[in-house]
Length: 25
Image (cartoon, rainbow, N blue to C red; front, side, top):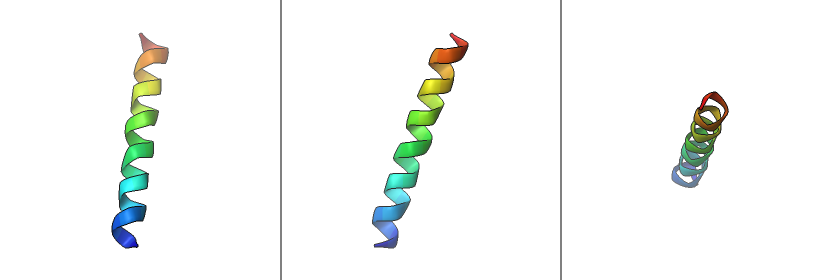
């Protein structure tokens, strides 16, 4: 379970980073 949650958090972080890059770009 902990592994699953960690993966979800990682995915959210990656998506948020991509969104920030798009906004800045």
